[in-house]
Length: 103
Image (tube, rainbow, N blue to C red):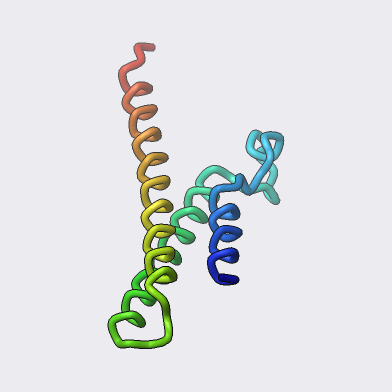
Protein backbone atom coordinates (compact mmCIF):
# COMPACT_ATOMS: atom_id res chain seq x y z
CA UNK A 1 0.00 0.00 0.00
CA UNK A 2 2.83 2.39 0.80
CA UNK A 3 4.35 1.88 -2.62
CA UNK A 4 1.11 2.91 -4.34
CA UNK A 5 1.03 6.10 -2.26
CA UNK A 6 4.62 6.80 -3.23
CA UNK A 7 3.62 6.22 -6.85
CA UNK A 8 0.93 8.87 -6.60
CA UNK A 9 3.36 11.38 -5.15
CA UNK A 10 5.82 10.58 -7.95
CA UNK A 11 3.08 11.09 -10.52
CA UNK A 12 2.27 14.49 -9.03
CA UNK A 13 5.92 15.46 -9.27
CA UNK A 14 5.97 14.47 -12.96
CA UNK A 15 2.88 16.53 -13.71
CA UNK A 16 3.78 19.56 -11.58
CA UNK A 17 5.53 22.43 -13.34
CA UNK A 18 9.16 22.74 -12.34
CA UNK A 19 9.36 26.52 -12.84
CA UNK A 20 7.06 29.43 -12.24
CA UNK A 21 5.75 31.69 -14.99
CA UNK A 22 8.28 34.37 -14.04
CA UNK A 23 11.14 31.91 -14.38
CA UNK A 24 9.84 30.54 -17.69
CA UNK A 25 9.94 33.97 -19.28
CA UNK A 26 13.39 34.85 -18.00
CA UNK A 27 16.54 34.13 -19.93
CA UNK A 28 18.74 33.98 -16.85
CA UNK A 29 21.61 31.49 -16.94
CA UNK A 30 20.45 29.90 -13.67
CA UNK A 31 16.85 29.46 -14.83
CA UNK A 32 15.41 26.39 -16.54
CA UNK A 33 14.67 26.89 -20.21
CA UNK A 34 11.90 25.21 -22.18
CA UNK A 35 14.31 22.77 -23.81
CA UNK A 36 15.56 21.77 -20.39
CA UNK A 37 12.03 21.16 -19.20
CA UNK A 38 11.38 18.97 -22.25
CA UNK A 39 14.56 16.99 -21.68
CA UNK A 40 13.64 16.55 -18.01
CA UNK A 41 10.19 15.26 -18.99
CA UNK A 42 11.73 12.90 -21.52
CA UNK A 43 14.14 11.54 -18.92
CA UNK A 44 11.32 11.03 -16.41
CA UNK A 45 9.21 9.24 -19.03
CA UNK A 46 12.14 7.01 -19.89
CA UNK A 47 12.69 6.25 -16.20
CA UNK A 48 9.02 5.32 -15.71
CA UNK A 49 9.16 3.09 -18.79
CA UNK A 50 12.24 1.32 -17.43
CA UNK A 51 10.54 0.84 -14.05
CA UNK A 52 7.50 -0.67 -15.77
CA UNK A 53 9.68 -3.06 -17.77
CA UNK A 54 11.53 -4.06 -14.59
CA UNK A 55 8.23 -4.69 -12.79
CA UNK A 56 7.01 -6.86 -15.66
CA UNK A 57 10.28 -8.81 -15.60
CA UNK A 58 9.99 -9.33 -11.86
CA UNK A 59 6.44 -10.57 -12.26
CA UNK A 60 7.40 -13.01 -15.01
CA UNK A 61 10.33 -14.43 -13.06
CA UNK A 62 8.13 -14.94 -10.00
CA UNK A 63 9.76 -12.40 -7.71
CA UNK A 64 7.88 -10.83 -4.82
CA UNK A 65 5.77 -8.23 -6.63
CA UNK A 66 2.00 -8.00 -6.82
CA UNK A 67 0.01 -7.63 -10.00
CA UNK A 68 -1.32 -4.32 -8.67
CA UNK A 69 2.22 -2.96 -8.44
CA UNK A 70 2.97 -4.14 -11.97
CA UNK A 71 -0.19 -2.57 -13.38
CA UNK A 72 0.49 0.64 -11.46
CA UNK A 73 3.99 0.90 -12.94
CA UNK A 74 2.67 0.20 -16.45
CA UNK A 75 -0.13 2.75 -16.10
CA UNK A 76 2.26 5.43 -14.83
CA UNK A 77 4.55 4.83 -17.79
CA UNK A 78 1.58 4.89 -20.17
CA UNK A 79 0.23 8.14 -18.74
CA UNK A 80 3.63 9.78 -18.90
CA UNK A 81 4.12 8.69 -22.52
CA UNK A 82 0.66 9.94 -23.50
CA UNK A 83 1.36 13.28 -21.85
CA UNK A 84 4.70 13.58 -23.62
CA UNK A 85 3.10 12.73 -26.97
CA UNK A 86 0.39 15.31 -26.34
CA UNK A 87 3.02 18.00 -25.75
CA UNK A 88 4.86 16.86 -28.89
CA UNK A 89 1.68 17.06 -30.96
CA UNK A 90 0.90 20.55 -29.66
CA UNK A 91 4.42 21.69 -30.48
CA UNK A 92 4.16 20.27 -33.99
CA UNK A 93 0.81 22.03 -34.50
CA UNK A 94 2.34 25.32 -33.33
CA UNK A 95 5.35 24.84 -35.62
CA UNK A 96 3.10 24.17 -38.62
CA UNK A 97 1.04 27.25 -37.78
CA UNK A 98 4.17 29.39 -37.62
CA UNK A 99 5.34 27.97 -40.96
CA UNK A 100 2.06 28.99 -42.58
CA UNK A 101 2.29 32.59 -41.36
CA UNK A 102 3.04 35.17 -44.02
CA UNK A 103 5.59 37.84 -43.34
